[in-house]
Amino acid sequence: MVVAFSGGVDSTLLALIAAQELGDRAVAVTATSPTYPSREECEARRLAAAIGIRHVVIESNELDIPGFADNPPDRCYSCKRELFAKVKDVAARFGIAKVADGTNADDSSDYRPGRRAAVEAGVVSPFLDAGVGKAEIREWSRRLGLPTAEKPAYACLASRFPYGERITQERLSAIDAIEQVLRDLGFALCRVRFHGDVARVEVPAGELGRMCGDAVRGAVVKAARDAGFKFVAVDLEGYRTGSMNATLPDAHV
Image (cartoon, rainbow, N blue to C red; front, side):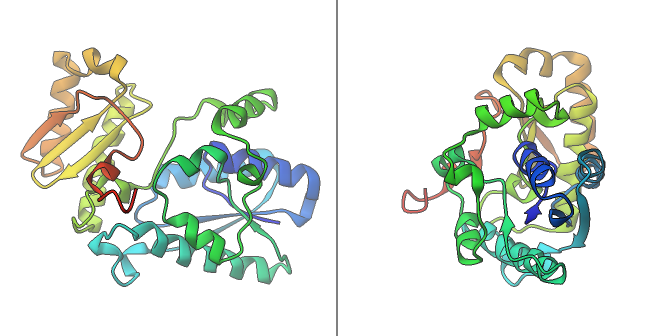
């Protein structure tokens, strides 16, 4: 089995199980791209080595996919279609028929056009098929001693843009730079959403007080200004997954 491996909570547990059950017949494949920060690639390499699974890193550039940079509502479909095609190429080189991803049962509750690409490509999703959700994946990760058991959820940097807002390398880098400052300040879970001249910061609701303290606020404002934004806003609802999906018509959600 080839595992599409991001180094996140789900794919790390799946990679470990694959390695334990299949030995050398298990391969993890990680794709680097402008929407995937280098720190995540380094983490994926470290995790794969710790698990003991054969690891292949490939290059992907979503910005080269026709229409991707225009950020349509089905942006993730285009991305995943290219990704799975490349992962299947790796599988073919190893003579492996099955490609798997870490989609879990909870993922069906949100708008995920990338799921359609997985189905079309014949990618299997063991956790989804077994009805296993995120809480159970985290619990098994704890039992097995995986460092990802408490890792915050992560989505590619393209998810920080409202649908229809053009995605560029410069804008991706700007968002990434601010999020790195937030992480350095101790916000393990954070998002910076792009709204033209405005950077909208999401941190967990329980951490909003610390976010607005003078020292932290000043550091975040400086990071946003250095990244080219004129204004910085803190979202009073706090961090939530898929907040950009609120801009979609009901037909897409």
